[in-house]
Amino acid sequence: MTAAEDTPADRAPLPEIAEPPRRLKLGLGAIVLLVLVALAVTIGIGVWRGSTAPTAVISGATPSPGATAPAGRIYVHVDGRVRVAGLYVLPAGSRVVDAVASAGGFADDADRSAVNLARVVADGEQLIVPAKGAAPSAAAPQADGAADDGTIDLNTAGADALEELPRIGPALAERIIAWREENGRFAHVDDLLAVPGIGDKMLESLRDHVRVG
Image 1: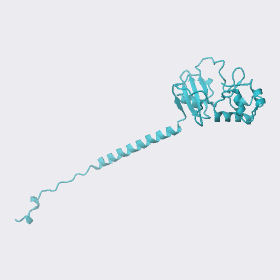
Image 2 (image 1 turned 135 degrees about the horizontal axis):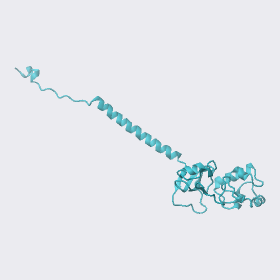
Image 3 (image 1 turned 90 degrees about the vertical axis):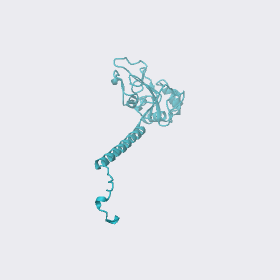
């Protein structure tokens, strides 16, 4: 019998190439897909939180005298019965609710009814959240910026409180607030002269009715 006439039985069988089980292929693909989706979600959450974060905290630091916050931002010192008291930088126009949220929210013993969450906070303001049953400070400003002596704090007063001042109408009240938001807190009562529409005579009529907190 020649080599050409070898029988199939004499030939060595070719090795078979095993294919990965179909279930294994699907399992690896699903795992890779889940990892990619989880990574995308994590990145997306990080970007969203970074873009919507309303505040920044400055630990153990105080702005130098005369310093102003970056454009569109204000400094607010949140103290008292909050979870993380400190100095915070918030967007201009933020309200008390934003400042309290920046400080981690109310402490368990905070007197929430003593705080007007809807009030707009001013640059350089110190917001103190009292404890339940604590007597308010005699010098503490009220929600509208008025102190017990009847004077109005130029740095915290809203439009309604400003309009109660002599010769101050809605338009001039809005100018005072606009100047405060653009230039930072009033350092002196005389700074009112920088507000368009307020001259020396009007300043003298306001001097006994306003203060700078």
